[in-house]
Image (cartoon, rainbow, N blue to C red; front, side, top):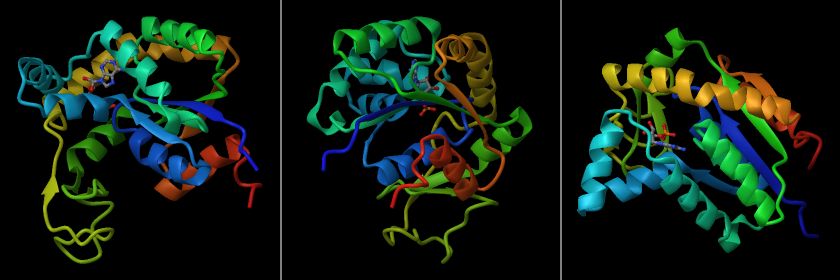
Length: 224
Ligand code: AMP
């Protein structure tokens, strides 16, 4: 039986757990995880003039332009793996991006089902971001204090032994990213609230706990 498409925006401050929750939800609901941050980091890793300038601005925590991001997301949504739906992680990050999302979905005759804001206070965010790192091979996420691999230096998931930290996960850049979040992204929350799409989730508990709350909002817990 064909599943009903599910189109979701996961939003919240940097470090609230959007990426982690999007990966879990993507597996649980069998829908595509679209992270604009990951798309931009892939572009920034290319040794081209554009890649190099993008790398610099990401390292400073600056936003990419609305036009470029909207175009990138619009094209990505058209790909066949998004037919069952998608989770937008890190998009929209500004009011113009939110308005453009509404427009492009209307043009494509698609509907946004739900926006979930993961709420975490700033003190916890700084601690989470400064301690996080991931496996260089499979991308599995870890944290210095909270989520250590079972065997020291070995990835639980793929056995990889190389780990990396994001270049923008440093104290000064996180401060910039939080300022940007408050000034530019926060207005999108009330925008979605007015559209009747917003649900808020407390993201201070365990990963599993937050994932269950999200699944409950989406009615996924009742399914087999
Ligand atoms: P993330 O992985 O979601 O934390 O994104 C990493 C960085 O990519 C952000 O700090 C921004 O510099 C940039 N970025 C990601 N998504 C967007 C977006 N929708 N609009 C503008 N910049 C973005």
